[in-house]
Length: 132
Image (cartoon, rainbow, N blue to C red):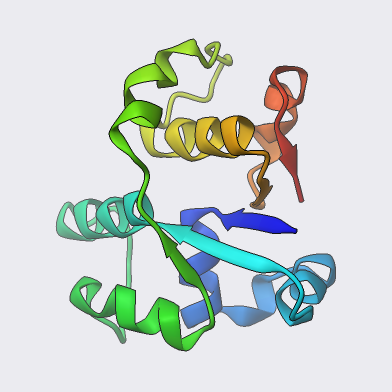
């Protein structure tokens, strides 16, 4: 099965692995699963750490692709067509994060399951999002 992890899940894997749920850990431990991290997540972490909105003590955003590969994650480059047609994802009240919306849209369009701890994601289920 194909999974895409949310940005905060990558940070948790690196810095706070105890925050990952047992259900999510089981997915990571199953070698039949393909688990991806988006290049958009690297950009999000770099921007937010530069603005002081995300604390990433102990690693540098430059190292994220290497760290992700060491964790067994596959790097997914979100293509320009996915970005261009992401406007089709209906807005959800109180969830305006453009990074999340692009990751969610990619999951819906490509039938990936999104691994996240964002409690607002249930609002996207009617649009086809599968998430854990």
